Length: 140
Image (cartoon, one colour):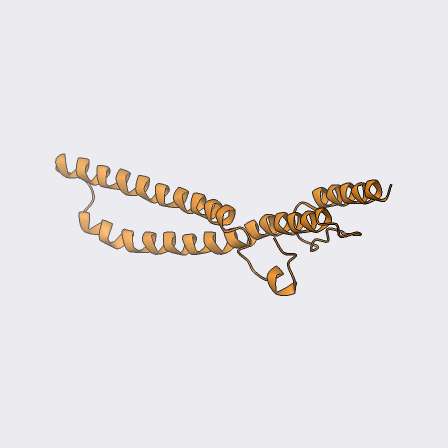
């Protein structure tokens, strides 16, 4: 793993496996909610039609398109927010791992420097303390 430069830090998908899995889980919950809603609605209309009463099925054709458009907009929003929020975790993990590799390869004075809004700042500080002790032990 190479130490990321400025160009690498602008990449939003740092750990695709983690980020895509997290986003897929969020999207799956939306799709599951949509399927449950569609199932309950279909059951309601089927029971109403079987009983000879109930709302006009044409009403479903009026209500369904805006609901589907709303779900599509929510899915796009989940993807955008998912990439942004998972990047705040995956980016620091990638950076910390790269700096640990640099220290293990013998480079002295390695410090983990995260961006101001990144997660795991306390963890990065502990890693910095560990690297300092590692450097001190190598000097002895």
